[in-house]
Length: 88
Image 1 (cartoon, rainbow, N blue to C red):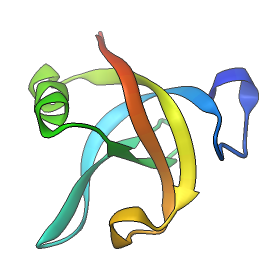
Image 2 (cartoon, helix red, strand yellow):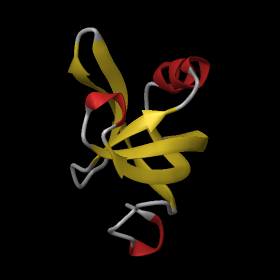
Image 3 (tube, rainbow, N blue to C red):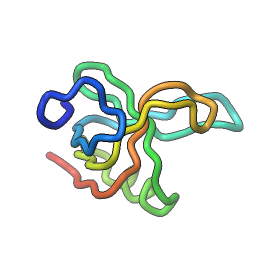
Image 4 (cartoon, one colour):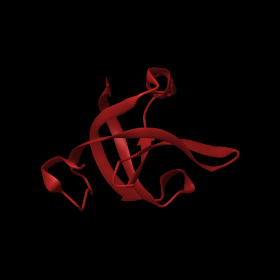
C-alpha cells in the first residue's frame, strides 16, 4: 500500500509491498512489483539490485520515488528504487 495512503504517486516517495512479476513482451521485459491490491509498479533499478530482489523469492518491501509515465514503453507507475527488503 502506498505510504500515507497516497493515490497519486507522481514524484512522491512511497513504500509498497508485494511480489515480483515480469511484465512486457520480449525483448522488452521488465520487473514489476504487484501489490496485494493488484496494483503494478515497474521497478527502475540497477540490474544487480533487481537480481538480488529475485533471489529473495519472497514478498518484498520497496521504497523509492514514484512516477507515472511511459518509460520503457509501458505506461503506468514506476518506482525509482532507493531501498528494498525481503519480508517473511
